[in-house]
Every structure is written in C-alpha cells, then in structure tokens.
Length: 454
Ligand SMILES: Cc1cc2nc3c(=O)[nH]c(=O)nc-3n(C[C@H](O)[C@H](O)[C@H](O)COP(=O)(O)O)c2cc1C
Image (tube, rainbow, N blue to C red; front, side, top):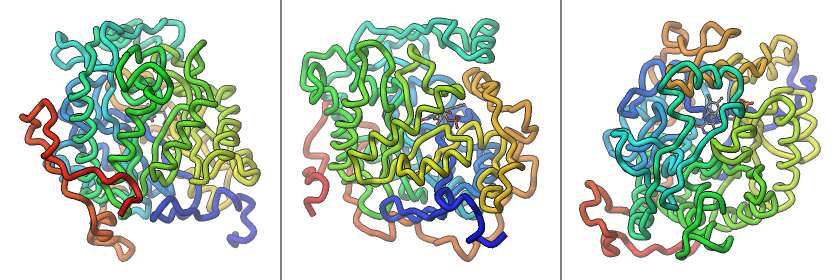
C-alpha cells in the first residue's frame, strides 16, 4: 500500500526529540526484561531481544532502567543493567550497535537507584533512601494474578513484598551520587546512545524525593513541594550539562501517585514545567506510585484507557514532545495523537508479544497484530528475575536462537562515531575512582554553569 493511503497517518508521522529524528511515533517502552548478567552486564540474550524490537520497526528502543551509580547497583531487585564504570561501555556499545544496525534509535533509561524499593545485595545493609526507617510493604492482593502466584510460591519473589529497613542519605551523599550519575550519563553517550531518559516514576529514588509518603526530610530536600522536587531538578540540570547537546534528554515521571494525599497531577505538571526549563527534549509519562500503590505502574486495560487524558493535560503545560505508555490499540492511539493528546506511543508488553507491531502499522496490517491479553505472565517472570516469556509469543526471551537478529558489517545508515561525541562539548567531570573523597570535594568538579548559560 502506498504510504499516502495508510490510515495511520499520525502514528507514522516523523518527529524530532531534540537532535534525534524518529521515523514515526511508536517506540519500545522501557522494560527491565531481566536478561542482563548478574553483574549488570549486557548478554547475548539481551542483544537479540532488543534487535528483534528494532527489526520489528520500533522508531526508538528504550532500555529497562540502568543503575547509574555504584551505590545504586548494590541495592537492586533482581537484575538490571549497570552503567557507572568505563568498563560498562563495551557491552552497552554492543547494544547500541545492534539497535542501530536494525534501523532504530537507541535510548538508555537510567536511574539513580531503587531507594527504599531496593534490596541490599548483602541482605544486611540498610537501604539508602530519602528517609530513615521507612521500608515499603505490598498488600498481596494488589498484584496481578501471575505476579501474586510468584509471590505466593517462591521465597525470592515473596521477599519482594516487604522492603528492607532504610537509612537517610546525607546531603553530601546526595551530591556525590548526583555527580556520579551525571558522569555515568556521559558514559552512555560514549556507548553510542542517541537519547538518555532519566527514570523518575514508580516510587524509585527520584520519585521518593518527590513524594510526601517517602520523603519526611526536614532539610533542603524535604518538606515543602519546592524542596521535594529539588533532587530531580538538580539531577536533570546536571545531566543536561554533562551530556551536552548532541543527544536527546528525556525524563520519565508518573502522571499521578494515585494514593490519598500523594502527588497530584497538578504537582506533576508543575514539575514537568521545571524539567522543561532545565532543558529536557521530551517528557515520558507513566503512572502510579511505587510498589505499594502497584495498580498503575503496569496498568490493566481499563486503567490504560485513561492514560491519554494525562497526556492531554501535560501537553497544555509543556512544548516538548510527550510520550505515553500502554496505548496498544493503534486506531485509538492514532486518533489521540491527532487530537494533540500525546506525541509518541511507548509500547511495552505489546512489543513483548509482537515486536513487529510497528512494521505491521507501516504496512497497514493492523489486523495481523498479535494483541496483548494483559495476562502479565511476562511481568510475573521478570519480577521473579528469570527473564521474560509470553504464552503467545514463543520467541520472547529466546531471540538469541534466531540468526536473523545477528548483525553484520556496519550498515550504510550507521554513523561510526557516537552522536553525542560528534556534537563535541561534554564537560570534564572528574569523579570516581571510586569517590574516595567522600564527603564531597567541590574542587573535583568544574563549576556548574547551569543549562543554557554557555
Ligand atoms: C516486565 C516489565 C518491566 C518494566 N520495567 C520498567 C522499567 O525498567 N522502567 C520503567 O520506566 N517502566 C518499566 N515498566 C513499565 C513499562 O514501561 C510500561 O509503562 C508499562 O508496562 C505499561 O505499558 P504496556 O501496557 O505497553 O506494557 C515495566 C513493565 C514490565 C511489564
């Protein structure tokens, strides 16, 4: 079918996020598929998994949350990628090469940590968080069925139900972590990522600073709203400064917390304005509080239906493109983009089950799409840390057995030098090896000039 006759005109319209051109509006949502190695390294299984989504036509492939500091990497749940050491560049470069070879842009989602949602690798260390003595606790009935099954039957996932005791991060530690995180983002640029997404939804550390439930501090990072948003605002400023203008920078936030007395949509819209002022190139909207809230992080069909309304409200407040998650129905997604409710559709479970969804839209074959049944088997398995599987896509997690996802010599469209390096001016951030100077020594850093100040 000729492109002009394809009815999905809005989904297929190209769009720019900062310096990065997306060929259309369908991207892979960040999902920690738990295919990394136990030291946070990229594996062949993971490379082939992302290759399949790039080959299936996604305009941009976003990784699951990468642990962006050494401290963060010591308090994870299950397995996550790591990026805080120059040695991590190698595997991540293999990943971006694989994604680029199949024609997609590569975006790294990176977090400064699980905070109180983390679990100490050694089981006996207090978990660093905004507030001391505040572990989380999940009500069993809040989990989707396969998740609850995993929780009921196996010790490891069951221990996910109750968080470990927390300790309060000191101000020196906060500053030191922020600086290390910005430096890690520079490593991502060297690894060839086109975009970097700061992960701040779902009750992780960045979100914990925002939320009155998890932030009971009385210093400059707690209390009133402008103090609670300081942590994320500073992180965003520093990352923007650190990575320069060569790559796109996005932030993912929850549109609301959905807990009584929790973060409201108005507050999050106010935060989005702050982030835009600090130079982000796109805003990605997810939903929900942390593990305790549960129901909106990976929504069922009914909850997902309301997500474009969040987009509509945020789009009134910011000019940068807005990504929303969970819009599996291409007809509705196309119409909502047309109405100006959001700009880009991030597909998670839907690209687990059918990585060729974007290609099928490009070929105007929506009826051939294998639609997600919201059974959440994938989620249950990922939470148990055993890698994803789907009852309706036998290839999920086994892509590495398919030679189609291997790469060959550099393809004509691939640029040999990472995009961010071509742009030139990443400032020198001399930090770890490995922060022996704690507490924070100002002179290790060049003065922070702030975004847009030349
Ligand atoms: C197995 C799994 C892992 C996820 N991991 C992340 C993650 O690392 N970072 C994140 O921001 N969201 C994560 N999410 C949420 C997804 O990005 C997405 O917002 C959610 O699944 C809803 O979209 P969907 O209906 O297309 O799946 C995860 C979801 C699933 C199912």
